Image 1: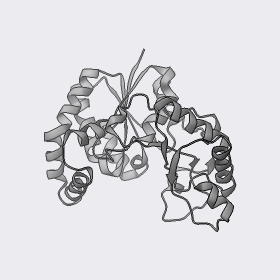
Image 2 (image 1 turned 45 degrees about the vertical axis):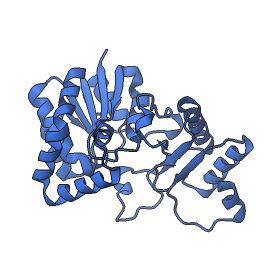
Image 3 (image 1 turned 90 degrees about the vertical axis):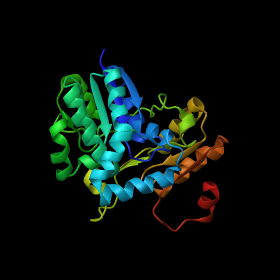
Image 4 (image 1 turned 180 degrees about the vertical axis):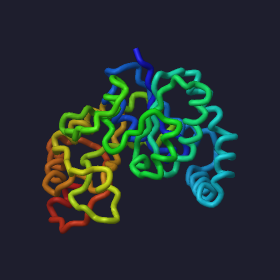
Length: 287
């Protein structure tokens, strides 16, 4: 059985559970022994400085003095991450790459390839969708997954290749995100979730049009059932919906609110939504 690690490296957000890792774990659990190792959270929990302080410190040095930034980060933490990964000895390790952790991802991949060439490295996430990032990261990785990763990562694990005709993910058939590997004591008591993919607008300044070609939404029933399943499983009642425009349509939002009210469910939820002209009844339901 293949041993697979899903991970996010410093510095991403620290105190929030990464949605991408839970989504991918739920999708590939049947393909091997899949574990989530969120080294980003380990890093922030190691220091007693406030999260906001250390995040701002990293931002300043990453932009103005990247060499000092990597020396500081590597000296204090990245060496320990490499030792932990080598100790786990996975067949495959997958990293989510963001603008804020692209440097640490590069260095970890480089050191892993120097010490354990047999470990297959897969990279995905928002920042692998740009040519400059691909050129920078490809030297020390085996596969780079652009766009939606659910089917591509399965293809790599099973056949060591990516199907160029990438399948569009059917959100209604996707499993509920699997957060069972997280120690919730180390995070804010909020679970991430997504209700849509892409956006119904194609604004030139927005990266959503680069990541997703087609706008899709989950039905109100699917959203409701997933949130209730996670609430019961993890004993957490607060959710952050990570979409740029939650629920997709006003009608879908209202149907979801109706289900919450009808079943007398007590949860807290929030997210981003495009301003629309609401009616009083919908605003009352959203409360």
